[in-house]
Length: 512
Ligand SMILES: Cc1ncc(COP(=O)(O)O)c(C=O)c1O
Image 1 (cartoon, rainbow, N blue to C red):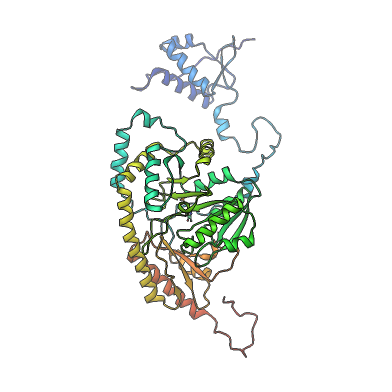
Image 2: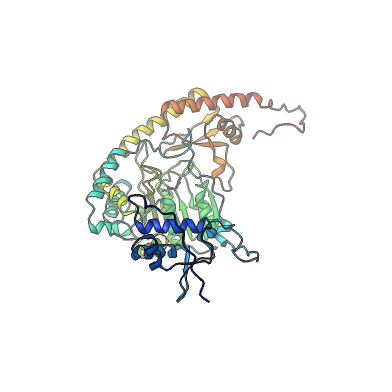
């Protein structure tokens, strides 16, 4: 039987000026439903009657009903009028997360993927303010005014073609500019067709893993290493073989002894992360030869290689490769602005389609307007100017750090002769433990990341990674003062070194 319509008793009065009539009617009916004046399941008058009752056009009443319908407040039963829905949308919004509305059955918890269960806990969510000596690129040196002008120009002058660009390899003029830049600055041999724009080296590595690796493949990585890298391989899961680096970086001779046939080798030849040495040409040639003989891919992470303060930079490993084994990667985020998230891969030509397809299936492509701005920034020489200016600035900050460490902590903290990058590994002497010092200086707002955090397997001396690029000379000296004060107090607390005849007690504090 058809239910009788519930008379509507909406507040009389005009809609506020500027409010459309249908919107006013929609809001009044919605209010009546939510306040319970209109009960669930009750039948509403026909739109024609409603329009007559409130002196509005039928069209307005229809529009109000349609909106309430589409939001789930009303339901229509064919040939039977319009009813207030028995489940209002708000119930779904506020429903307890596990219960299923209207049933008593306990919900079976859906399972996560195997990959999700292998993911490490992410601690670096990057929202902490920068504090000396947190290793990070400097956001303060980014030429905001120049970028803003270029970005505005790109937007104002954007053609239909640019606005509709959806090339998943990236914006072609930017790929051309990058190919030119890499040829001149890094000795990379490539054309624009082999460049793929990514959001950074990490994204480039993610695509590489998708395209080149299968679960259980073996990957050689430098030890110590940027911890995200082995975590990404293990998430696949690939088998990670750590190869200890020495003063010349990665050594394929050592690697061969640990792993006969790697599927991929991850290296940072320009400036080993985190220790800093540059891989000499002889090691590069040996690595390429080993890769070509075993059919391994090489992932070359050329992060912040623009920052070399002395000596001639050695061209990228990719430039020496004649077999198409190297996937080369670099990043604008590391040298321009950490939040920019724009980088590039150079891949052998036969892999371009596969990488483009992998990019297409993940997130298609980077923002084209940002790529267009980056293209002009690079082509008009602003990038080169930025690098030259910051190279000088960061070299002077490295010098300030060296001098401050030397004057306050000579014989206690040793800085090696590394002339590249935006961070330095500092080594502790006198049996001090990096973890103790990191904890002590953290209490005074100073960051010292123990090298131990980057080590996979091979034990190392005690040391820290100290970022210097984003900090003023004053901040650097203040940070070193904190180090000096903390180390002094720790040295005072340290037990006397044991004499040969002295008896060990259970409480003797362990000093490495
Ligand atoms: C050695 C190394 N490679 C790659 C990355 C990631 O680079 P991107 O920010 O371009 O993804 C980092 C970031 O700190 C790094 O230290």
